[in-house]
Image 1 (cartoon, helix red, strand yellow):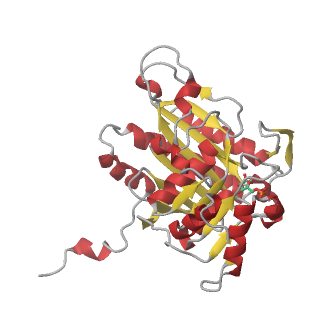
Image 2 (image 1 turned 90 degrees about the vertical axis):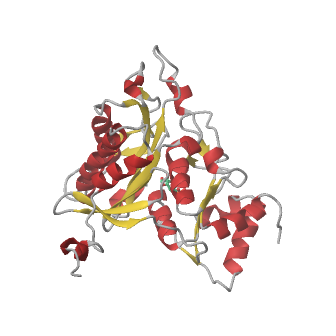
Image 3 (image 1 turned 135 degrees about the vertical axis):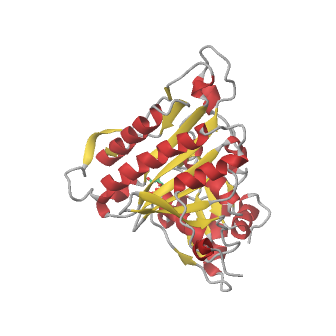
Length: 344
Ligand code: P6P
């Protein structure tokens, strides 16, 4: 029997991100098309940011914006631009009640009554921005929560925001690297899309990605080694002395880039507590939790050295956390040190 004419396209099915998000809808019967509509706001923003990042060297947009953000860090103008674009693309979606950004001290409450403001979107608009002026990869990280009480009347938006990562409805990131790649999960696996600059479309290139269970790459800022607690130092010494497998070190200095490599190639990324960052440096709500959701959906693991990242209940919007994330085998080995089960 002759093949159906369409079958020859089966292997190279061309799926856009919008199509894929709509298809994911069947797993979330309670979320009508509004969930897809919300995520399309994120994709719209990241396409605009990607275009700006690609031209950063061509227009006088580099250089410090001359003021500090709530984290006390010099803000590059692209940070501001990325933040503005995400706010604009998400604020008018109609179903986003609260926006929270690394760049804003307080959350932006758009709808404080009723189901209109069903979703909460948190983001780091341009992670690793210090890499911008040396043309290294940067990224956008986002996390979607649902308001817990959609009753009427003003509510304390922070109470709605301070939910553990296991309650995320979606999480993802875009890495503006040699190509622009969009990675997301809604709890049904991890899916990767590459932006086709010619058509401005994110096209599916990996569905149901799985992180390698082991790996030979560790990623840490070695300059902080003297500052790490002894169990972390012992773990790293063990890794460095390993022969089978022999490990190599890679560190870009942008979480999105270091995590993306770990997701694809396996290994471990760690940002432990240090004297300078006694709680850890990375933000729990809009850096650690979204990456942990993706890592676990890909078969990996994410902890702060004691607790599963996705079970941590934040006490403030910009709360920091230590992060050990990557292949399950290696993260479990790190935990055996940080929990005091191993000392060698
Ligand atoms: P360090 C970028 O500033 C960032 O927030 C993360 O993207 C990155 O993983 C980390 O800080 C790098 O920190 O102290 O090694 O420069």
